[in-house]
Length: 209
Image (cartoon, rainbow, N blue to C red):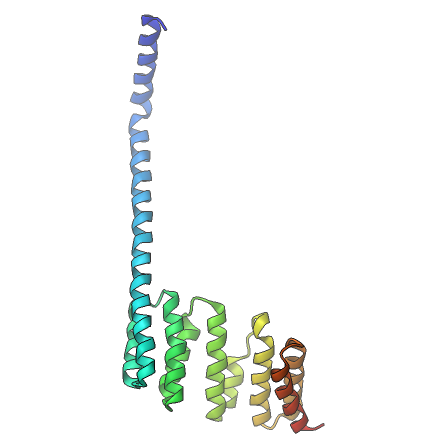
């Protein structure tokens, strides 16, 4: 390339930079800020998940000690500080089971309702609804239990939810509706799920008709 050609190329670059230099600089800066923000967000998320994991491990140890006050407090801390993590939904179900076992139905219901309202995964919400409906059945609050299970369930839960609805309807004395629910449960459960199918068939036989 001749000297003249080099000068012409340099002048072209200068002209381009004069026209687009500021815009290019801003684009580069914005890209760097976005990249830094993305990396910072990922780091923050990983750090929160690690802290939540430690607190969940603490909950597991607390559960083994059967201290229901401490279980409720640790669960509240998890839900308050790390409610957006997967550990929070696991904590709610674990705490609810522990509180239910020791007879603290109010505490168990609070934890299950939190999972229903805030769980990240639909499966956890469904499990929480099933367990809360069982407590409502124990309390003879049948209408509330049926309302809780009124939404279309996930495919994997159709059988167990129909079964629980059958229990609620049977307790209300609505035997025809209960039979229909139990038949839906039988039709939804796998043929390999022998024990569950036998139990539902037993309920059907007990209703007669």
